[in-house]
Image 1 (cartoon, one colour):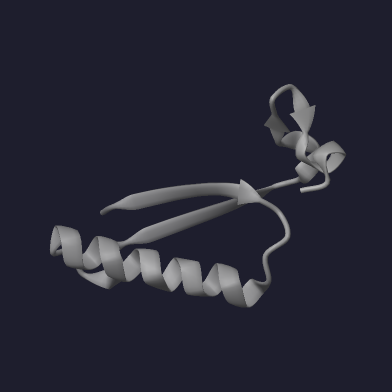
Image 2 (tube, rainbow, N blue to C red):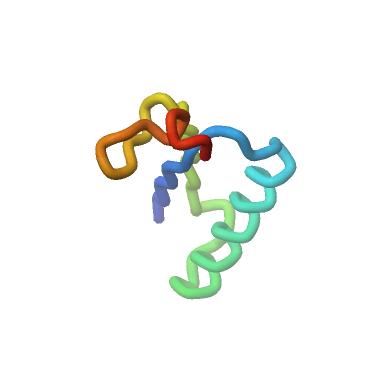
Amino acid sequence: MPVIQIQMMEGRTPEKVGALIRNVTETVSDTLDAPEENVRVLVTEVPKTHWGIGGVSAKELGR
């Protein structure tokens, strides 16, 4: 059972996250010849205050 973990900054709409899950599931299923129902996708949204870029939080950078 493939398990895919995605970490990204918070801020995307639920629709965008849903589309990401669907697209990743389809790609992994096709690539590995695994049934889609066996593919697991875990999306973790990290607060911008907890995402560092060059020693500064993404929030401080205005991202």
